Length: 195
Image (cartoon, rainbow, N blue to C red; front, side):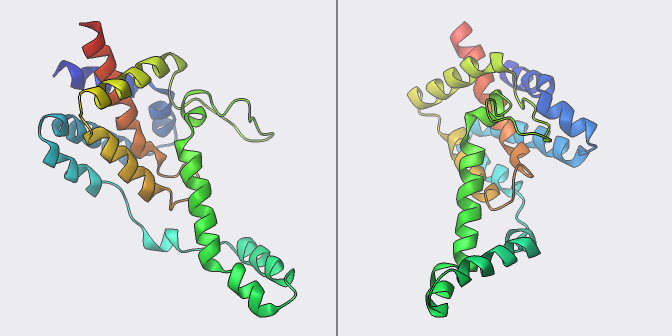
């Protein structure tokens, strides 16, 4: 129970949670609380982790939609090929899906995105913010170490499953689903390494 209280404390002091609260995304906050409780329960009973995967939203229209500008760029790249058939073979919607997926996957895997506000990649006109405090990074890494050495892979399975699915969506639209993983991993380190 102390681990769960510690995870909630870490979750609710993170700037990410306050940003969701400020934006009025209360459903996301409810999902974060529910996922934290379910993932905590999965540490004791691994089969409970399957419930956590139900919270990962799948929205097929969001995954397979393109903006008009993207379709225009796709047609522009097709026209660069000397043969129209070659252009359609190498520049099509499938390659566009793969490109989006790859970009989002590596964007969500970047620790720089979570702990450092994407520094030193500040962009003009774009407000960057730390999703998690920098002081939490050593605890998070210690929690990962503890999970691997004690063979508690439930949180890691959730992280990679969520990561593979939310990478279909653009930017950081659903990346808040990874917050319970970060907070529980940090709480594991604080609880087990401080004893």
